[in-house]
Image (cartoon, rainbow, N blue to C red):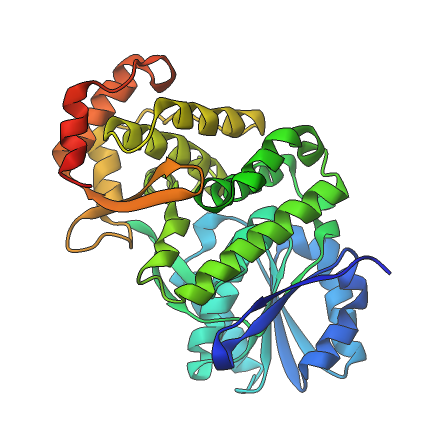
Length: 384
């Protein structure tokens, strides 16, 4: 039998386990019985994932005498909207799913967010299970209970904290993932290394070739360690009142870029890759970190094949998009700024400082610019 790993997310009555096992989808019936799924269930997925994995999930549910309703959606972040949630709700209501019925999220982060949010609001909450099939979902978004949809003014502005009953990860599903999606998922792995674990970041740096070839051992290592870090942070701060905000490194600018592109030009991991480099550079501008840290983050982002350059948006447009981010507090944009590997600071930044940095960074190019001048450290002291 393929090796099995579990990571516990201990949240009292909302506790659950993350199960990681190659070939898990072929043994899904056992998991369904252990969880006590009965009656009716819905399986929410998209067209791409359905082609490969919907049939075995439906067979497993049927073998457990569960009447499963498949809900197949068009793929893409642009469909992560209230309109799509309404369509899912219509099916759940029409098929008379009850409070004891389960929703299974079979797919990537978009499907997980949509299915989880729908489960949270249908009949004031029914149980759901995450079955992530992308690296970004297996290493990050399927864990922690964040669910929601996008608004035209900002990403994930509408949502709820709603924990799954279980997360079932089969790394073998990553073999059918398009290369672009696979590479994008590595952004979240790099993020975990920067904010929490130098050994994980070093592992990624040493095993770039193996990760790009999707070698099973390399995949298993980065998925499990990312889940462990996410679980530790969520257990300490379930609803993002304090420590959990460190998970937003790369996302303040990253989400703004996704919004400006209409959720079409950049996929999430690509935007986060750019966001990590840009936010590290801004931290250096503020005197919070050394230039060497910026370049290390840039090197690993480039090495895995992620973009590291800001698209040609004006600083005013990027700033305005950042103002609509759900992390804005008291009208202030709050960022996660790296100090060193494993250490970050959560601090606000004002608009004039942001524009000064943006003009400087994108006039000369981040990689070729000299160290921050003494005057910039004076700016930093206003925030630290």
